[in-house]
Length: 267
Image (cartoon, rainbow, N blue to C red; front, side, top):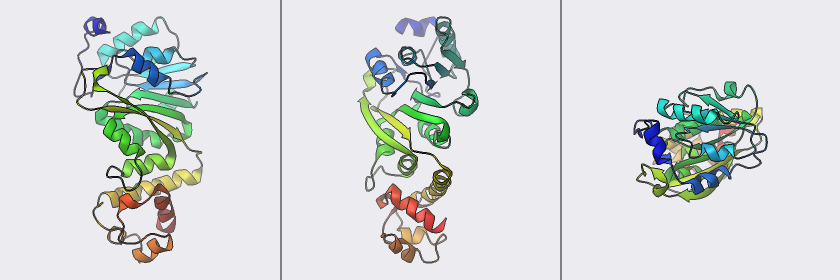
């Protein structure tokens, strides 16, 4: 892979959040986290120089949609495509693509070494598209991965914890050290498997309400709930007590189920 950087003129970009995965053992291990890959359409976000791409292509998948924004890396993907008909290259910004249009209404999975600077934004974007997604195997900065999987009462439990866990089953798979990247980041990374729960209209509507509530209370996370909920409930203390909570609690003490019960009371 070192020769590929020179061959394709690739220079890691801080602006694009690029840390290229260069360890084949780790790449293979990430690809193997994808359950039941037979016949699946897989979307990889930020393919780089194929550290993970080549291992995904070894799986019995139907198609790999390779989304890459860096023009130099796209040249590499075109060379890879010449020898593998499974690849469809999408030379666009992952924040702007319409994933459902790319898969033409089919279900798909996402596997990605996510750019850290947009990782949470992308996850939130995908949580709105879960009716088409089978599963996601994603690499985050470890701190973010732990936040996604965090339990109530944890210091890192917050908006993304509640939203992701309401919509999906979350599994923290394993740590990834800085030494397997070029250039090596200054932090540890972590792999998370995200599997959507059964989607229906009620869950999707409730999710949007939970999102609004989370944005409100976690943006004032030091305040007690009886204060942050004043413009939602006439008597916040009474409403909270009716579902076994109290007004002195703060948002990080509420479980995902507590948020669900609360929005069904007043939003």
